[in-house]
Figure 1 (tube, rainbow, N blue to C red):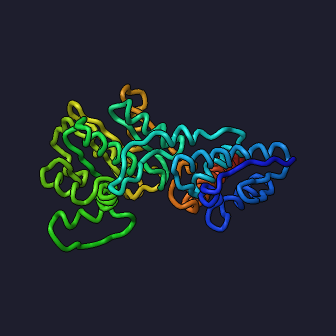
Figure 2 (figure 1 turned 180 degrees about the horizontal axis):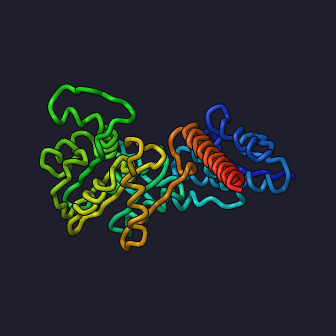
Figure 3 (figure 1 turned 135 degrees about the horizontal axis):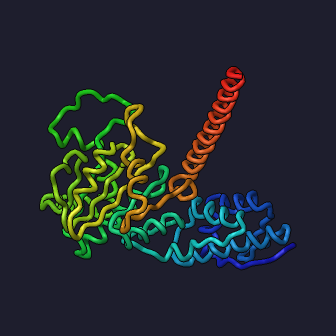
Length: 336
């Protein structure tokens, strides 16, 4: 089957990608041939594949017409839906702008999982964002907090994370207390600077309106009319998580983010995030957003790495169950 579609010249480079990388990916994934002549694109292949390819290109064109730079992540996301026989909701997701960075770049969800996460934050008082690295859990939470702060919906932003070493012993760190904890909080500062700007952050920080601190500093406080984000929550203990969640005062909103596959706690220690998901599952006004490798918005290779680790873990779990079954069968035979 052959069909022709028109892509305006001003959008060709954006949709085709560098060295036609996006077109090559669509050709390979959907088993179609794409021939471009001027602003006309000819799609050649089976009826089903050509229809899928047309849907992908139409969606990418609509994104481009809205002023978006088409990334490899956009192409991969749209293709993943097409291969499942579903229509991507990328255009609806793209229209949900949270705020703008200091450079004027819009901050918005890029996947269905991120959109669900943002919607839950708007609806619920406490939201848990759980997912692998690169799914935008912290960045989007930060954007929502800064937007609420600018609109005077809250009077303070509090960002915290447990100061725990990622499998390394760093030993003695020079400097005062702030200098010692700053390296652990650097990802939070990076997001603040990008969305709010360094000057605005420092000005509000000096007034005590924005606070970035280790989780241990939260004990004994009551946090009213605040936007509170707990990052890297998988590295909390159940006692720390309970302590944190009981700090919440009136008019506050809490976002807890974490990745259960990247725990840095000592072996045998239960994660406070894992424990809280079991304990709080049925509590109203608490939302749970689960993101997958399909929601990864970093370099496409990150998505492949996350997927490879997930598949390996599943394989090891299946092997473990088989070995346990064989062991139990052997015990039963010996008893006979």
